[in-house]
Amino acid sequence: MRSKRLTFGEHVELGERLKEAHEALVCASVQVGNAYTKTDQRRISRALNALDAARCWLDDRVFEEHPAQANPAIYYGTSKRYDEARKRVADMLFVAPSAR
Image (cartoon, rainbow, N blue to C red; front, top):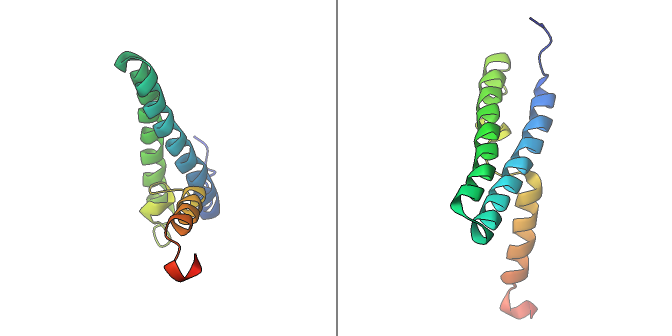
């Protein structure tokens, strides 16, 4: 068994990449579901389930290895890129009437 563990910073970076992968697979699942059969959509869903199992395992590790710093948002929630894009869209949609 290897004794090297991820640092807290490595967990945060990996969590961000896995959140982005999760968002991409959710979008792909919807897109495939709209274009192909439910059987075809399940192929994407299997990948999503495998990714979720890995995130769950890693979430357990970060809480075990870094209990003082651990937070569910490391592996769950939305990515920074998603949050930034959502804010830009909201800013475009909800411009104050005086600014128009």
